[in-house]
Each structure stands twice: as C-alpha cells, then as structure tokens.
Length: 293
Image (cartoon, rainbow, N blue to C red):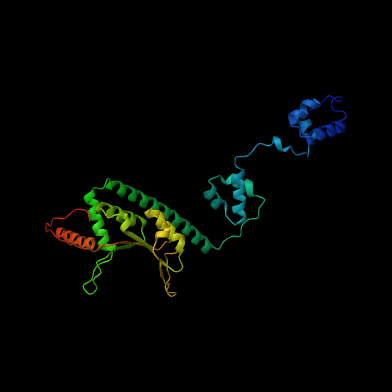
C-alpha cells in the first residue's frame, strides 16, 4: 500500500515530533490527532522503540498471580505444582515464567515421595472436614441444658478431675484442676448453680518452668473474670530433660487450680451425690438431694 508522498515526505522530521510528543506523555491517539497521522502502520513506525507513558498502562488483574508464579518457579516448582497452587492455566504460567531457568529434575524417588505427601495432605484435609461436620452435628444434638443436667454433669466432672479425700489422709477440700477452658467454664457454672459465692473461690496457675507464666495468668484471669493480681502464687513444675513434652508453644497455658474456701461441707455432699449416681447407674434408685451449699 502506498501513501501520498507529500503527507509523509519528511518522515524523519515527523518522527522527531512524534517522539517528542510521546516523551512529553501523550497517548497514541493524542499524537495521531496532533500530527494528523491516520495510518496505524505509519504511527507505529514513528513511535517505534518509544515506551508508552505510565498513565496509559491499564492495571492487570493477574499481576499478583504472575509475580507469585515467578516466585514459585524460582523456588523450583513445576508447572503442575504452580497450577494447583494458583488455579491458573498452564499457558498463562508458561507465558509468565518462560524466561526463567528450568528447575532441576528431581530424582524419581523424591518425586514419588512428594506426590505421596500431597495425596496425604489432601486426605487429611478431607478427614478434618468430616471431623468438623461430625462435631458440629453432635454439638447441635445437645440443645439447652437443664439445671438437673448441669448438676449431674458437674458432679461427674468434679469426681473425675477434682481432689478426693483418702482414708489415710483426710483432706475434705474442694479443689479442681484442669487445662481445658471449656471444662473450667462448666465447672464454674456448676458452682454457680450450687450457690457457691465467687468470693469463696481462689485461683492458682500450675505450669511447667518453660511456659509463659505471666501470659498464662492473664489468660486464665480473663476466662474466669478476675484480675490476675488476685491469683495465688504460681506452682512451677520442673521439667524432666529426658521427657519430650508436646504441650508447648503459644497454646500452652498450664492448668488452672480452683479452690473453694470452707468447702468441707460441700465436699461431703459431692461425695454423697457421686455415690448416689453410681448406685442409680447400677439400677438402684437413690434420691439425689438438692439445695444450695
């Protein structure tokens, strides 16, 4: 295709003007209108090698994916692995990372182990989802708890986790120790049901020497609704270096010890309630006494 020689005769001069306008920040359309260049081929030749100004560039929604794909490729990931991780097509991945070096080929045994680990992680995720569904369904089965149900639950809970009197050591004290915040909440609700004044309660943390003592005190104080300054002296458990402990990390807060002052009478009643429950479970009807302590 030929063009009128007069219009583009001074091509170099026209190119100098086009380049100057481009570097001044004008868009292709603005340059075209300013110079009256109505042919795209000519305009392309005039602006050859001149990058567009930043303001004319449209943001790319895939820029983040592209950057992440390049990062993973540099870490040695394959196209398949990047596709699974980012959820984008292999053609896009190839376009984004084709200038990067190929990752070293893995030993077949190593690849098999990696594939097995991926399958196992997927299986664990499925199992965890099923586990959570089962727990949620079971939780909905409980519904509202009656006072009698809370009463019976509290008695059983105390007898499982609370301090017990021994014939060889008479200690009729009401003392409860546990590390589960849910168990602590139920126990306190049970004491409230029995009419035990919160002013009669004393709190103490029992924790390994390697734990965060102050952090544990703050956590338990927030849970029971008191200031940590009222806590009794912390009981520090010495760590046996030969024992590999798994209850470590940020989630480890030791145990909370809750004692009831002047609790001998209450302890005797708990003992009796438990005896009655055992008898009832054995098919012997024994009336359960009630009333506030």
